[in-house]
Image (tube, rainbow, N blue to C red; front, top):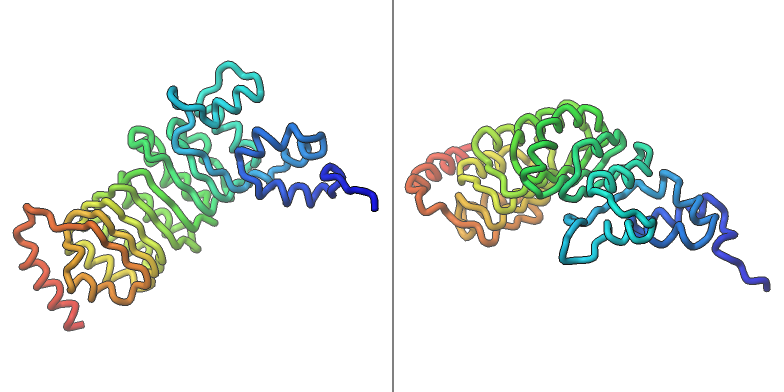
Length: 273
């Protein structure tokens, strides 16, 4: 039997296979195997899911950006230019995007986005978040959003409610979750299934607002938060209907002297309904 070669694989099959190998291989390995693989790697379908390392420009380590410059004989290339180049390969078909620190909001013009994770670099996140409510108006397919911080959170989730009918998962790093934010989550995302507020400042009364208002929660992560005690049995009772409730490491703010009084008022109201 004659040995079959990878380069003889049908084009559509090649695209299907290469779309699963990951962004790094698509950039640094696949194009250099053979002409047919290079041609297949240019198909936008190969670039639907793009996962960038958080930091791709480090002086003390050899990064993906360094590998790209070395492979393509490029002397200078900024993180922003590199990110735009890679996202541009999808021709607007990118459905899953995890962005690195150091790129601008220009890379967010992808109407097919289903999953988006913004950088954790808080200085840059402010630039993204200032225009994010407007951009969300283009993302009718968006289901999962991870934010680098909680700035403009109310405006963002209000727009999600107006645009994204299938939205189900929100993650916010080190969020300040006051009454306004908690109420906005309940009002605009009543059907949310996954909510991650790990490391947040969230007073118990605001946690109660979320627990009572978001009846469809399957996953709630409030680990390492400040504002409530993770071992309080009453907290566990309020969250007893949530399949995965993660609260380890959360503790009451030592300055929150009115916790007991506030809780009794809210909990009595909860039990009477």
